[in-house]
Amino acid sequence: MSNEVKIIQPSGRLDVTTAADFRRQVNDIASIPLPPKYLLVDLQEITFMDSSGLGALVSALKSIRNSNGEMVICGANDQVQMLFELTSMTKIFKIYPSAEEFKATLA
Image (cartoon, rainbow, N blue to C red; front, side):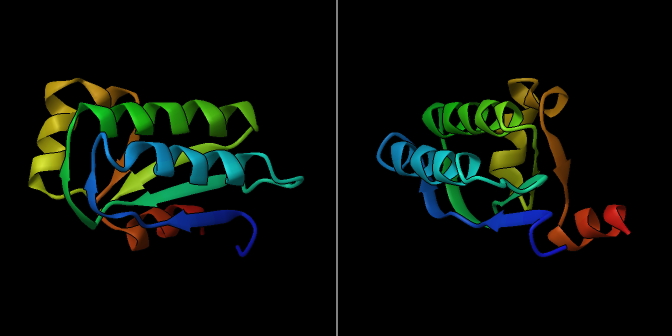
């Protein structure tokens, strides 16, 4: 599973001040010669996310899909989960309660 799944775990705020760094990190992963099949974005350390953060996740999803991969999200707190639900992003993203639950789907 080592190169099948790449996990990134941003922390703190995912907002206008940090969104560009997050996008850059994902673009770096998507542009390596053998990108991972799955990018798991673990949001358990995110304390706040706004529309800029949501935009960064959408941008990341597009980058990973363009490299023939899939992006999944796990560990969203109540505020982030509510943001996904209010914006109907639960229809766009595959969201798991935890990294362990996602990994169990690969077995």
